[in-house]
Length: 331
Length: 245
Image 1 (cartoon, rainbow over the protein chains, first blue to last red):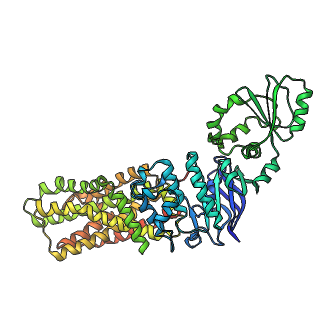
Image 2 (image 1 turned 60 degrees about the horizontal axis):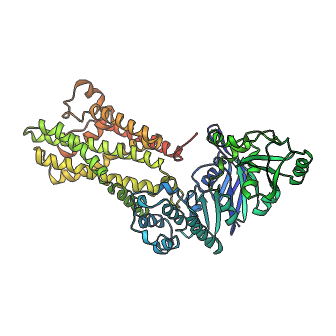
Image 3 (image 1 turned 60 degrees about the vertical axis):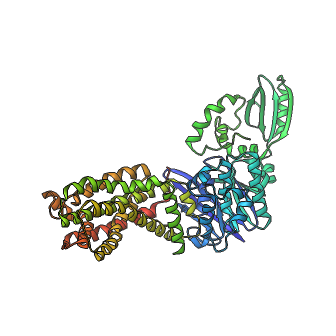
């Protein structure tokens, strides 16, 4: 059974096309990760699915109905941005307020305990720490005993322990048969939680498959070595120099190493490793135009020193680093 | 309906937790009363009663334009607002809750004016007229609530503050609220009936005393209500929270 569906959904803000004919189906029991850099269109897609915005063209459905119809939203749970909790209300009051919208809400104490907030019911949300606020925000998605929760970057800005608490709660919900659509730019999060990954970049679905398959499709390997000066090498998707080590992402490590050896260039400490999903995902999104101008300007100064100038196999110099704007610094 | 009360309760809670906001909305009308009415009434009981009614109209107008104009615009800036729109309820309960909370606060902000009128001026009304006036306050809240909503839903909060301030003084003076009925400067008497403040004030004057309402002002008030209602509805529909382009 399909719980949420986007059918050729596009959304335009003025001149910017935030979503470009996106197709997505979330079926009952799935835990789907929505992955993409900032500005890729993840939040816009989420907003369409929960009825906050209308698609400019195409269709979105929630439980077979229009998400803008309140009845369609009865079985979903959504997380507010943690900064948006009304600061003067107490934790318990916020939970009660949201509970009032559902026929059979989870009792307040039980919900707060599940998210480690049991002692804080009397505290005003404005006085909570960032992690506590985030946990409360995520807890609110589960108040109404939803069948589908849509979590937009639920653990952004959390420390490792808090992130694991939330992951456990999300996993427990999924193990009980719940369906989850989770957007993230933390690849670790998606790798840990999701079974299926939908990669979004520049408003389009770039890939939609299992975590393993996404890695397989891309088949990117990381070749790293220490060298001063290298000739142009074939198949380099991305090149970074970190602490004197040169990291080359390539779709064909064998060919690259062969060319490297044949070039007789001096190098030491050669290493070939499979990539993390993050690197795979950068390889998918990297070749395209960056999503927004803001990202490019924000990222260019920081990443410019990493440019090695080795090769330019994609013919889009500078853009792969622009796409890295979505990469969280914690990874 | 129950949800509307829930929304009203939490909106009031949010406001009351910052008491200075409540004090602020009650302060302005009270100060206006002390500066514009108390020194000039002498022992003219009828004049004082009409002047107090004018000040109440003034308070109702400023309370509603500000709390809806600025309040709604600020809410739209908060991420909490879009979140509540993902809850399985239409806009009606939230809207009704807001209006209930707004009305409650309007009455609260009128208390100082009524107390000052009763103690520091010779203004007097019969208990029946007092009740009638209280009901009239709810009626004349309608155009100003709609005006506030139109401002709040169509403008970002910083612009809404300015527009609310720009709008409310000319409306007060132009509607003749700061003069006795029929006693305003000539050009104000000419334009007053065309402003919503005048129709509202006439209703208030006729509630507190022996005052024949001008049909023109009442008709124009009706026109304003329709106009502002369409404007507010239009602004609400096109609103999808704060927009970036």
